[in-house]
Length: 85
Image (cartoon, rainbow, N blue to C red; front, side):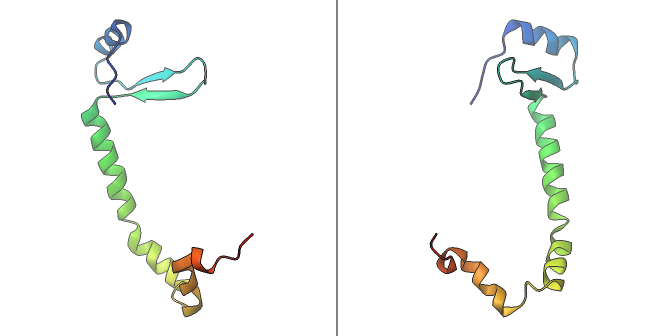
C-alpha cells in the first residue's frame, strides 16, 4: 500500500535528511519509524542474512538435544497426532 506524504511530514523529512523519523499514533500510542525504502531494504537483507547464518548452529543444537530421535518424528505431522480437545 502506498500512502502519500502530507506536506507537514515532507517538511520534516527534508529538514532531517537521512535521519529515521519516529511517528507516534496518538490514538493507539504505537510508534513507527519512517526511513527511506532503500535503507529499509538494506536493513532487512542484513537481518535475514544474520538469521540464516545461525541455521547450522540451530540444527546442531536440535540434534544434540534429541530431535533426531525417531520418537520425535510425530512432530513432523503434529496435527495428525494431536488429541482432540
